[in-house]
Length: 213
Picture 1 (cartoon, rainbow, N blue to C red):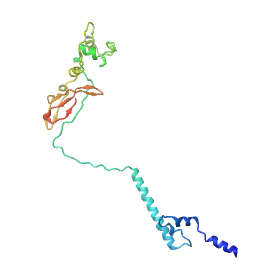
Picture 2 (cartoon, rainbow, N blue to C red; picture 1 turned 180 degrees about the vertical axis):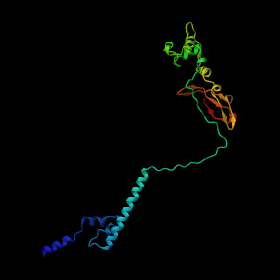
Picture 3 (cartoon, rainbow, N blue to C red; picture 1 turned 90 degrees about the vertical axis):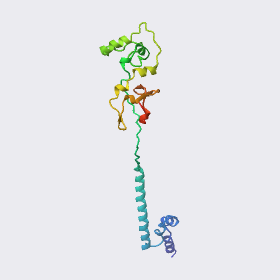
Picture 4 (spheres, rainbow, N blue to C red; picture 1 turned 180 degrees about the horizontal axis):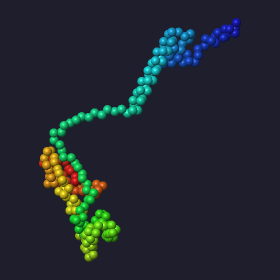
Protein backbone atom coordinates (compact mmCIF):
# COMPACT_ATOMS: atom_id res chain seq x y z
CA UNK A 1 0.00 0.00 0.00
CA UNK A 2 2.79 2.37 0.87
CA UNK A 3 4.67 1.40 -2.33
CA UNK A 4 1.65 2.27 -4.52
CA UNK A 5 1.19 5.62 -2.80
CA UNK A 6 4.86 6.46 -3.35
CA UNK A 7 4.66 5.55 -7.06
CA UNK A 8 1.44 7.58 -7.52
CA UNK A 9 2.92 10.64 -5.84
CA UNK A 10 6.10 10.41 -7.99
CA UNK A 11 4.09 10.35 -11.23
CA UNK A 12 2.41 13.63 -10.31
CA UNK A 13 5.71 15.52 -10.12
CA UNK A 14 5.98 18.10 -13.01
CA UNK A 15 8.78 17.73 -15.53
CA UNK A 16 11.53 20.29 -16.04
CA UNK A 17 9.94 21.61 -19.24
CA UNK A 18 6.65 22.13 -17.43
CA UNK A 19 8.39 24.04 -14.66
CA UNK A 20 10.21 26.20 -17.23
CA UNK A 21 6.99 26.85 -19.19
CA UNK A 22 5.07 27.95 -16.13
CA UNK A 23 7.82 30.32 -14.99
CA UNK A 24 8.59 31.72 -18.46
CA UNK A 25 7.22 35.05 -19.69
CA UNK A 26 7.23 33.84 -23.32
CA UNK A 27 3.64 34.28 -24.45
CA UNK A 28 1.68 31.05 -24.99
CA UNK A 29 4.28 28.51 -23.88
CA UNK A 30 2.68 27.99 -20.48
CA UNK A 31 -0.55 26.90 -22.20
CA UNK A 32 1.27 24.20 -24.16
CA UNK A 33 3.28 22.49 -21.42
CA UNK A 34 0.67 22.12 -18.69
CA UNK A 35 -0.10 19.37 -16.20
CA UNK A 36 -2.41 16.66 -17.39
CA UNK A 37 -3.20 14.84 -20.64
CA UNK A 38 -3.01 16.25 -24.18
CA UNK A 39 -6.08 18.33 -25.07
CA UNK A 40 -7.35 20.20 -28.14
CA UNK A 41 -6.63 23.47 -26.35
CA UNK A 42 -2.96 22.53 -25.95
CA UNK A 43 -2.76 21.50 -29.62
CA UNK A 44 -4.24 24.82 -30.79
CA UNK A 45 -1.85 26.78 -28.59
CA UNK A 46 1.06 24.74 -29.93
CA UNK A 47 0.04 25.41 -33.55
CA UNK A 48 -0.40 29.13 -32.88
CA UNK A 49 2.97 29.31 -31.10
CA UNK A 50 4.85 27.43 -33.83
CA UNK A 51 3.17 29.52 -36.56
CA UNK A 52 4.12 32.78 -34.84
CA UNK A 53 7.67 31.57 -34.24
CA UNK A 54 8.02 30.49 -37.87
CA UNK A 55 6.70 33.85 -39.13
CA UNK A 56 9.16 35.66 -36.85
CA UNK A 57 12.10 33.63 -38.14
CA UNK A 58 11.12 34.12 -41.80
CA UNK A 59 10.68 37.88 -41.42
CA UNK A 60 13.89 38.24 -39.41
CA UNK A 61 15.94 36.31 -41.96
CA UNK A 62 14.44 38.40 -44.80
CA UNK A 63 15.33 41.65 -43.01
CA UNK A 64 18.86 40.47 -42.26
CA UNK A 65 19.34 39.45 -45.88
CA UNK A 66 18.02 42.85 -47.02
CA UNK A 67 20.41 44.65 -44.66
CA UNK A 68 23.48 42.83 -45.95
CA UNK A 69 22.48 43.46 -49.58
CA UNK A 70 23.23 47.17 -48.90
CA UNK A 71 20.25 48.52 -50.82
CA UNK A 72 20.32 52.24 -51.55
CA UNK A 73 18.24 54.80 -53.36
CA UNK A 74 19.76 57.55 -55.49
CA UNK A 75 17.72 60.66 -56.14
CA UNK A 76 18.79 62.92 -59.01
CA UNK A 77 17.38 66.37 -59.69
CA UNK A 78 17.87 68.03 -63.07
CA UNK A 79 18.42 71.77 -63.19
CA UNK A 80 18.44 73.51 -66.56
CA UNK A 81 21.26 76.05 -66.80
CA UNK A 82 20.36 79.00 -69.00
CA UNK A 83 23.93 80.32 -69.01
CA UNK A 84 26.86 77.91 -69.10
CA UNK A 85 30.25 78.77 -67.65
CA UNK A 86 33.25 77.85 -69.74
CA UNK A 87 34.70 74.67 -68.20
CA UNK A 88 38.17 74.44 -66.71
CA UNK A 89 40.24 72.33 -69.08
CA UNK A 90 43.89 71.35 -68.80
CA UNK A 91 45.73 70.34 -71.96
CA UNK A 92 49.28 69.21 -71.18
CA UNK A 93 51.69 68.91 -74.08
CA UNK A 94 54.02 65.93 -73.58
CA UNK A 95 56.75 68.02 -75.23
CA UNK A 96 56.63 70.77 -72.65
CA UNK A 97 59.20 73.10 -74.22
CA UNK A 98 60.08 74.23 -77.74
CA UNK A 99 63.67 73.31 -78.55
CA UNK A 100 63.89 76.09 -81.13
CA UNK A 101 63.36 78.72 -78.41
CA UNK A 102 66.09 77.44 -76.08
CA UNK A 103 69.15 79.61 -75.57
CA UNK A 104 72.63 78.92 -74.26
CA UNK A 105 71.68 80.49 -70.95
CA UNK A 106 68.61 78.23 -70.73
CA UNK A 107 70.76 75.13 -71.24
CA UNK A 108 73.32 76.32 -68.72
CA UNK A 109 70.72 76.70 -65.96
CA UNK A 110 68.06 74.13 -66.96
CA UNK A 111 69.82 71.74 -69.34
CA UNK A 112 69.98 68.95 -66.77
CA UNK A 113 66.35 69.58 -65.76
CA UNK A 114 65.32 69.21 -69.40
CA UNK A 115 67.37 65.98 -69.70
CA UNK A 116 69.34 67.56 -72.55
CA UNK A 117 72.60 67.75 -70.58
CA UNK A 118 74.11 65.75 -67.76
CA UNK A 119 75.45 67.03 -64.46
CA UNK A 120 78.71 68.03 -66.17
CA UNK A 121 76.80 70.04 -68.82
CA UNK A 122 77.74 67.50 -71.48
CA UNK A 123 75.39 65.90 -74.02
CA UNK A 124 74.50 62.38 -72.78
CA UNK A 125 74.47 59.60 -75.39
CA UNK A 126 75.06 61.84 -78.43
CA UNK A 127 74.90 58.81 -80.74
CA UNK A 128 71.19 58.51 -79.97
CA UNK A 129 70.38 62.11 -80.94
CA UNK A 130 69.18 63.14 -84.39
CA UNK A 131 72.15 64.66 -86.30
CA UNK A 132 70.33 67.92 -87.01
CA UNK A 133 69.25 68.31 -83.38
CA UNK A 134 72.70 67.26 -82.17
CA UNK A 135 74.38 69.97 -84.23
CA UNK A 136 72.04 72.67 -82.89
CA UNK A 137 72.40 71.33 -79.34
CA UNK A 138 76.19 71.36 -79.52
CA UNK A 139 76.12 74.95 -80.76
CA UNK A 140 73.82 76.07 -77.93
CA UNK A 141 75.66 73.99 -75.30
CA UNK A 142 79.06 75.50 -76.09
CA UNK A 143 79.89 77.05 -72.72
CA UNK A 144 83.53 77.81 -73.51
CA UNK A 145 84.24 81.36 -72.34
CA UNK A 146 80.51 81.70 -71.60
CA UNK A 147 79.41 83.98 -68.77
CA UNK A 148 75.98 82.90 -67.44
CA UNK A 149 73.28 85.49 -67.05
CA UNK A 150 70.41 85.81 -64.59
CA UNK A 151 67.86 83.05 -65.11
CA UNK A 152 64.14 83.35 -64.37
CA UNK A 153 62.04 80.20 -64.45
CA UNK A 154 58.87 82.22 -65.04
CA UNK A 155 60.38 84.06 -68.00
CA UNK A 156 61.75 80.76 -69.28
CA UNK A 157 58.36 79.06 -69.19
CA UNK A 158 56.57 81.94 -70.84
CA UNK A 159 59.16 82.12 -73.61
CA UNK A 160 59.81 78.47 -74.49
CA UNK A 161 56.35 77.11 -73.66
CA UNK A 162 53.90 76.29 -76.42
CA UNK A 163 51.75 79.08 -77.81
CA UNK A 164 48.00 78.59 -77.69
CA UNK A 165 47.77 80.06 -81.18
CA UNK A 166 49.74 77.10 -82.54
CA UNK A 167 47.70 74.50 -80.65
CA UNK A 168 44.09 75.69 -80.93
CA UNK A 169 42.49 74.33 -84.09
CA UNK A 170 38.87 75.27 -83.41
CA UNK A 171 36.92 76.88 -80.58
CA UNK A 172 33.19 77.51 -80.23
CA UNK A 173 31.33 78.49 -77.06
CA UNK A 174 27.72 79.62 -76.56
CA UNK A 175 27.14 79.37 -80.29
CA UNK A 176 29.97 81.76 -81.12
CA UNK A 177 33.36 80.97 -82.54
CA UNK A 178 36.34 81.85 -80.36
CA UNK A 179 40.08 81.79 -80.81
CA UNK A 180 43.39 82.20 -79.04
CA UNK A 181 42.81 85.96 -78.79
CA UNK A 182 39.90 85.28 -76.42
CA UNK A 183 42.26 83.82 -73.83
CA UNK A 184 44.80 85.55 -71.66
CA UNK A 185 47.68 84.24 -69.54
CA UNK A 186 47.43 84.64 -65.78
CA UNK A 187 50.41 85.06 -63.51
CA UNK A 188 50.38 81.93 -61.38
CA UNK A 189 51.72 78.63 -62.75
CA UNK A 190 50.22 75.15 -62.73
CA UNK A 191 52.38 72.23 -61.59
CA UNK A 192 51.38 68.91 -63.16
CA UNK A 193 52.97 65.51 -63.68
CA UNK A 194 53.94 66.69 -67.18
CA UNK A 195 55.70 69.81 -65.97
CA UNK A 196 54.93 73.42 -65.15
CA UNK A 197 52.42 75.25 -67.32
CA UNK A 198 51.31 78.91 -67.41
CA UNK A 199 47.52 78.95 -66.99
CA UNK A 200 45.26 80.69 -69.48
CA UNK A 201 41.91 82.20 -68.59
CA UNK A 202 39.10 83.03 -70.97
CA UNK A 203 38.20 86.69 -71.02
CA UNK A 204 35.31 87.70 -68.78
CA UNK A 205 33.21 88.77 -71.76
CA UNK A 206 32.52 85.05 -72.28
CA UNK A 207 31.53 84.51 -68.64
CA UNK A 208 34.31 82.00 -68.12
CA UNK A 209 36.19 80.45 -65.26
CA UNK A 210 39.92 79.86 -65.32
CA UNK A 211 40.97 77.54 -68.10
CA UNK A 212 44.40 75.94 -68.42
CA UNK A 213 46.12 74.83 -71.58
